[in-house]
Image (cartoon, rainbow, N blue to C red; front, side, top):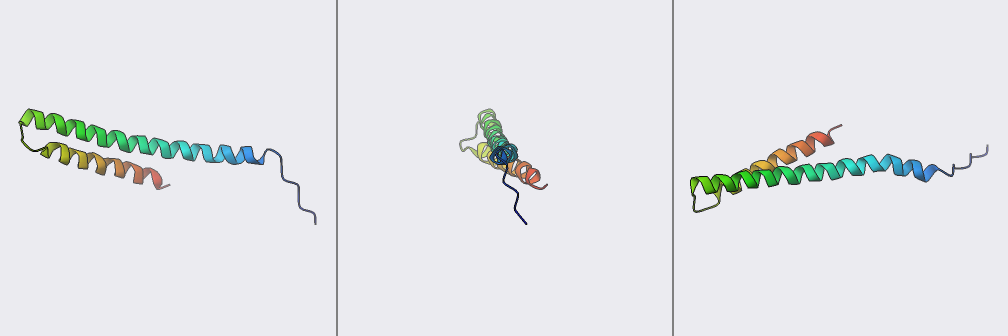
Length: 79
């Protein structure tokens, strides 16, 4: 039996298959960064409002944003 010759457009098909996964991973990274950034921003505003000497709100809400972002990333990875 002869093996069929590979098609000339095979690499293009591979690129089309990998492009959506690259875009989805980039989207997950942006989503994670935005959730952490929003958490830090809310924490900074809370620190300013409560007039705390230490950045307790920034640390807590930053960690909360990290947890929320990681939850969204892990949820998206489960197919």
